[in-house]
Length: 394
Ligand SMILES: [Fe+2]
Ligand SMILES: [Fe+2]
Image 1 (spheres, protein in one colour):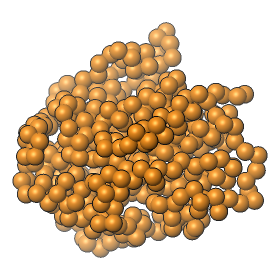
Image 2 (tube, helix red, strand yellow; image 1 turned 135 degrees about the vertical axis):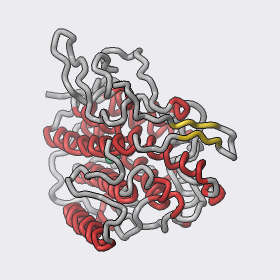
Image 3 (cartoon, rainbow, N blue to C red; image 1 turned 180 degrees about the vertical axis):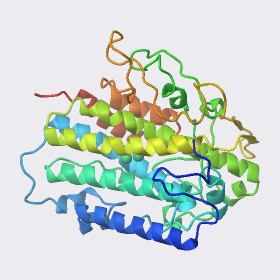
């Protein structure tokens, strides 16, 4: 676990006194990089990245469309496309309040108090939030565009953009009441923390093994990961608890994608569909790894939500216990495939059976969809069932 002012993963050093020019240069590099990435998708798609509907997507169908996907392969891409729409929706909420505001991820104006509380985990949290948000937008945009290019229906959740979301300073006023996801009533399962530090248990082998929670109080009751209103930013201790909740929510979500893509890929038939799943999945792993490092920096504290009365305690994870020690962020090896084989460092779980339905259940239990309609759940359940029904046809 790196201290906030220590060397970064790319070798550059950070400090509070870093010249402003460095920041500006870094952000401008980010923009250039992303512009080229968007160019790959084509300007028509990039412009509509956040709001593109089926009609617009259909209009970009080109002569490149050929062949067509099997129903199973289409379902294996459509379910993650829907999840990426959901991911993008909540990352956009995080970015409006705690990320970097620019043309790449537009709409918000930033909440300075929340952004500062997030910076207690790492001074570059705003940059990472921004870049993670940008990534998710491109994931659903690409997956849907690919589906349409093959004559298959894209995932479309526009009818379900009905949730209120935050009204605190910084949010995009145009999106109040038009969110897909709910970040204010989360129950966050932090057992991934010990799952990746445990060299004896693999959830694929031991589905009933209970991996201990890093932050047990986040795994019960409901917690907000964003300021709901400006009143939530008045108590610095509670505001830090909100930022810490976000800091643990980020890797909790990303470890899900980290497992989902390799789990789905095992049932792809077309090699190009396999390539897509194998190429997006590891970016989720990069997100997870980054956030799992930052989460350990969440300041130890106890706070009580003044609105709900719910208490949360963030423990000091700089402990002498390998199952919890915060700098042990590299995955421990664990049993895989057969216990007669040696343990190996792997993503886990990756069992493919029922994975889409399981992912939907995980996100639902998290509270991410509290307030959503029965139509939303029916649509998502259908996409998950279709994905889980896909079989490898070779
Ligand atoms: Fe993603
Ligand atoms: Fe992600």
